[in-house]
Image (cartoon, rainbow, N blue to C red; front, side, top):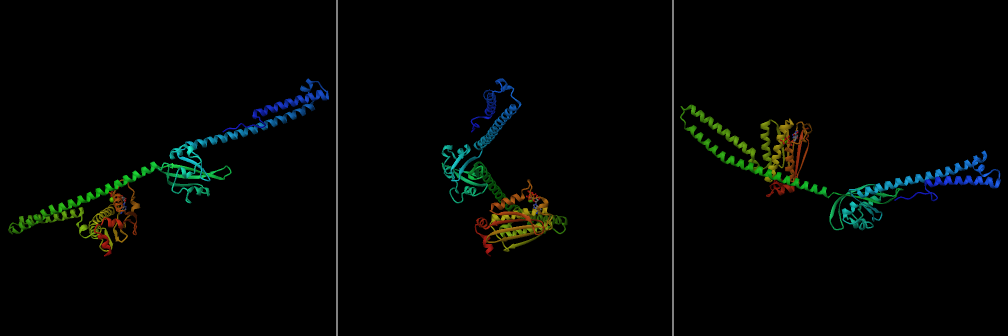
Length: 448
Ligand SMILES: Nc1ncnc2c1ncn2[C@@H]1O[C@H](COP(=O)(O)OP(=O)(O)OP(=O)(O)O)[C@@H](O)[C@H]1O
Ligand SMILES: [Mg+2]
């Protein structure tokens, strides 16, 4: 909006013109005065050749008129410029408001909508005419609207910037997730006369987050499924090797022993051959049983988790020379098959990591089952995670551990152990233990 700036009905040029006109009229009147009243000169002389005294007086008055006209025109010009600048700023603000990517509205202290932009109108699905003048919550409803917890009252009470997430409901009943930020709307003197609200529609972001979460969950389910298939496959292979190969090797060993006994004493070379064949078969039987145990330790099914962990620790110590101290509370812990296998595999991965990365000489293992949860801590006295850098893009061991633990609703924590090396803690809550434990031996074991 633009107003014409005038002083006594005149613009800046009009004022200068008026100054000139008044000066000319004054000159004429003064000359006429000398011709008519004083009669001391003719008109030409009075106009163009006045006395020095007269000339000095007339020029002083003319300069005063012109100076006054000039100053008045400057004032008008300055006012016009200030108003132009204010109008330009207002237009720019209008444009920013109207073309903002976020829905925006301004409400007064009674929460009536004073103004709303096009994006806001589209967001709520109403024309502006049906928005302006209505109470804010009648247009876009949130669960804290019209209550003492309304964030807008905080703005009116002096909070400079209030931001919150809310599911806002449109008049047609559909809801839209938004990030709302509210700031005071002030008069030039600083008085708060309302609130400016900005609504960022985050439906797309929420949908993307949901999709990402869903695909993460599906991926986790797939990983768990693949792991259980892998375990089944390992068990099946272990069983087949044990049954098929084990029986054949036992029969072979008996036959070789039978042959060895029946060979005459003078057949020393043949006796030696059958003896070494017997030894070879015994070694093979041991290898087969070791492979079977590595594939699926029978001890895990037969005796329980703590015994299986102790057995695995013994194997580890005899293979690597690294001492392994185990502490179990209660002494015997039996969990569901699924959970036992998961914990056992996590333990195996942890030991493998210690051999590969830790340069440790001692490992402490702590297993604890309480009515609340199952806890396992494996710590070493090696160089520690920080020295080796646990965050590697191409390593999957700990990632697999994390996924296994999360599959049971548990938590994994990596930290520094008492002896300065790496420490891995896992906690599985009791509901997961009970759920995976159809006969509930875990809790029974604990109660014992
Ligand atoms: N006991 C440990 N002491 C020191 N660093 C460790 C220990 N355990 C793991 N790390 C560090 O954490 C990293 C990640 O371990 P993770 O088991 O995920 O991967 P990886 O063992 O390197 O490879 P893989 O995928 O074959 O298991 C390791 O590369 C190592 O730097
Ligand atoms: Mg590893």
